[in-house]
Length: 144
Image (tube, rainbow, N blue to C red; front, side):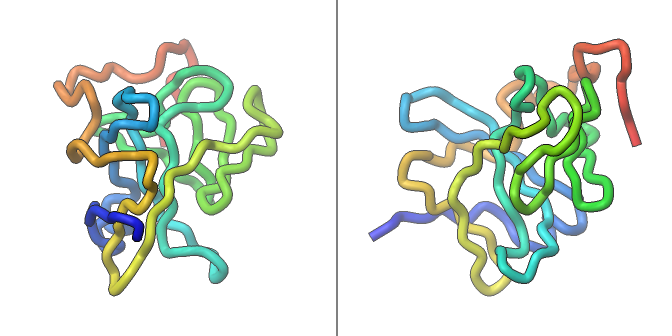
């Protein structure tokens, strides 16, 4: 039987636009994951992704900003690559033809549960949740 941990509600993810948590992966490393709304009838109301662009180790979710989602795409703040919020696939920019790594979740009665057997929930928020995130390591500093 799969163990599960309640993360948050679908309403919270929709209201905030995204939601982040830290978990321990199958290798014993702490990693950030974030939830974003998904408006696709074939998928749950939210999806969960590793908080890192596939092109470079750039956070897609940042404290104080969240994940930038525009027209159903998660936007990398460093180079502007756009990942489909439901599939994680990127069609443009430096991350083109890659897909964000996901983590297994279930949505039941409006609640989001972590169900991935290889990932153990640690806490809500980012690993360096000190409010000192000055943004992406880039000169473009895309914001919406």
